[in-house]
Amino acid sequence: MGKIYFYFLILGVLIAYYIYTPLPDNIEEPWKIMLFNALLKTSSYLALFAEILGLNHFMETIVFLSSFLEVPPTSDENVTVRHTTFNNIPVRIYVPKRKPESLRRGLFYIHGGGWCLNSNALSSYDLLSRWTADRLDAVVISTNYRLAPKYHFPVQFEDVYTALKWFLLPKVLEGYGVDPGRVGISGDSAGGNLAAVVTQQLLDDPDVKVKLKIQSLIYPALQTLDVDSPSYRENSHFPVLPKSLMVRFWSEYFTTDRSLEKAMLSNQHVPVESSHLFQFVNWSSLLPEKFKIGHIYKNPTHGSSELAKKYPGFLDVRAAPLLADDKKLRGLPLTYVITCQYDVLRDDGLMYVTRLRNAGVQVTHNHIEGAFHGTLSFLQFNIGHRTVNQYISWLHTNL
Image (cartoon, rainbow, N blue to C red):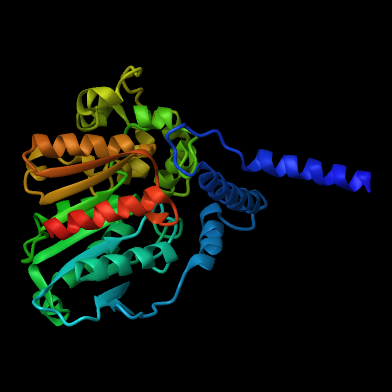
């Protein structure tokens, strides 16, 4: 009997060691993050093992595992939910059940997942859309798009742009009872990237008569040029989105060729002929002082021209909206940006806030201390619940 207790003790110690992750003091409910991170690690190890054995691509295994968290489009007492397509792009539509007093707001939402994972059916996105539709008395369109590694840039951008243009057709807005003067766009992470990109592209599209009133970007990924900013350095191994995973997401967005990922990890992927683009992402001049403390800007080491010739997408403004020039930025609508302290993508959002303000765009920036990437999706966390309330409150005031 003593041996059994000893074995259970050893097992318990090993499990505790596997779950435990050192976290900063200002993180709320650290045990929840540790447990969630342990689940993520387990999924990643399984996916990596399957990939090493040649059984399945890493991202496709994660997609399969996360599919167990999807929910059907089920209506409730407050919101009618249904699935349809906008010009062949799958979307979920959330419409409040109460009788409208006037035309409603409209919000077009784009899910995150590194252009490789997730869908609008994920339970966290479904719940967020329900809350937003009910509390804003808004019609929420939550869109899907084809995913890497099967589909690469610019497919994801084109899918989202196609669905958005369909929604913005006057007859479609009229059919859903949406006020054409009160339509906004929002997205998180890779979805924030796509939201920023399509908002820029709409400015020069003569076919679109209805313009967006607001854009709301939640810890967005906005540039591919420099993955050695202070936030990448400080949060390189932080739970949920370590640097290695973010770089792989970026790489998979453009190609399954792992040579791009390798070059990005060493920050040596931008060819010398594209060096002029660094002015748009130079964190030494674009970050507020407090985020630069303890960090020295390194002049970029230029990479091979071959990678840029093979995969030009990583230098395309439709993939990296921070590369847009000031003239383009000046026409953008009222903007809300959420950044989190413990997030490799923090500096992308901070630099965009600076550039938008310099271009004369009105920006509300909500930087959340003690928060981590994905916070908005974790409504079971206190900080996630507060962040969602702040997000919906801003939309209520400005949309």
